[in-house]
Amino acid sequence: MSWGTELWDQFDNLEKHTQCGIDVLEKYIKFVKERTEIELSYAKQLRNLSKKYQPKKNSKEEEEYRYTSTRAFLATLNEMNDYAGQHEVISENMTSLITGELTRYVQELKQERKSHFHDGRKAQQHIETCWKQLEASKRRFERDCKEADRAQQYFEKMDADINVTKADVEKARQQAQLRHQMAEDSKAEYSSTLQKFNSEQHDHYYTHIPNIFQKIQEMEERRIVRIGESMKTFAEVDRQVIPIIGKCLDEITKAAESIDHKNDSQLVIEAFKSGFEPPGDIDFEDFTQPMKRTISESSLSNSRADGKSEPKFGGKSKGKLWPFIKKNKGAGPEDFSNLPPEQRRKKLQQKVDELNKDIQKEMDQRDALTKMKDVYIKNPQMGDAASVDHRLAELGQNIEKLRLEVQKFEGWLAEVEGRLPTRTEQARRQSGLYEAQNTSAVNSCAQDRESSPDGSYTEEQSQETEMKVPATDFDDEFDDEEPLPTIGTCKALYTFEGQNEGTISVAEGEMLYVIEEDKGDGWTRIRRNEDEEGYVPTSYVEVYLDKNAKDVYKSLQTISE
Image (cartoon, rainbow, N blue to C red; front, side, top):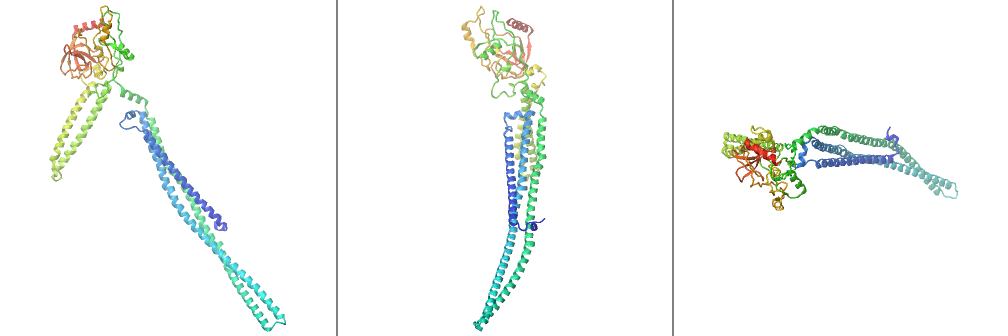
């Protein structure tokens, strides 16, 4: 099967067919190029999508990524980023292995095709020239034969006419012979040209054209094979990234399977657990007795809810509404005593870890400088060993300061975790309970309202004693007319800075009077002298109660109830 023998007369159709083949190849190149652009655009959109939902650094959102569900989402985002990278690989490989190679091949193919059809046209022009020469020789031979016949007839006519002179007859005879000779020469030339044309025509249709068409056929077959190979490459490029894409999808599945709802629930507890006990029941306060009355904390909470002013109140509250009390804003104390026990422990542990890292960093610098100093001592030409002494001393001081800081925070941490032998479990839990919750317990020590002999309140007295009770303010007024009796003494175990209203500062080792013992909220009311009294954390003092005074105090409390 050869185009040269089967399609010897289809030069124009072959030219059109091969041009269509090149057009198909160029169309396929354009298709692959657009596919690569789509892959790049898709990869870019995937990367932007992954980046859009990544947690911002040093933001509150980043804290949420400690849970398994959010970590799984973060892993999904990272895998999608890798997934996008594989689409970029597809684009790069298709560009280099298909579009780049085929573009160069098309240029070569066009040059080859142009050369082959140029040779074909040249062969056709040559055979057409030979045909024209043959036709010219044939016409000349035909004309000369006709001229020879006419000359012969004219000679015979002149020879038969008796009136014509011999000279005219001789002249006609010579003319006839000349024409006859010219006819013979034309015949010989025509015969030679015919033989030459037949030879050229045979070579043209059986040698030149078949060879040219065979080359065109081979060229076209190579084009077909090449486009088939490119299509295989097209599929192979995709197939090569399938394992990696599958691995990305497997990692996403693995991340989803790693989600542990129980663990996340436990993390929520660890993150927000305060360590406090829920508030107890609020005691009933009977206002039917003709005696001094007190405003309970339930009344206080109602007044806050209604947004109305309430009179001052006295006495110690029985129930604590600590979950609803606002906390101070701004920086808290250094020992985090304003935080609930569990949160305080975490903050202290975090601070200890940070200080230990700083110590290690300083020690690494000191070790490096020590080695440098040793090198300078052994090789004085490299530097002065005394030049690093100042820096070494500075690092030593920094390390000592950091170690003292660590000891301080570890002491507070040990206190919270219950490692101090002088602290009870309840004291450890309640230590620092209301440093920043500026209401409730201390508000209960406000002075009693005055009442008339019949137990009713006068309007004037009510107006004088009425006040606004903000949700975060302590009422630090105490009843000067009827001070609470002393029920014992106490010794300050630690120094306490009473920064909030209603509290009192004490120094370590100081002896003070107890006027109201801890009601379970972690605070004890003490007195230094007649003018100074307030609340301190129970865990900061060691209480020595007088039994008789304590019994009297309890009796008074029972009567007031």
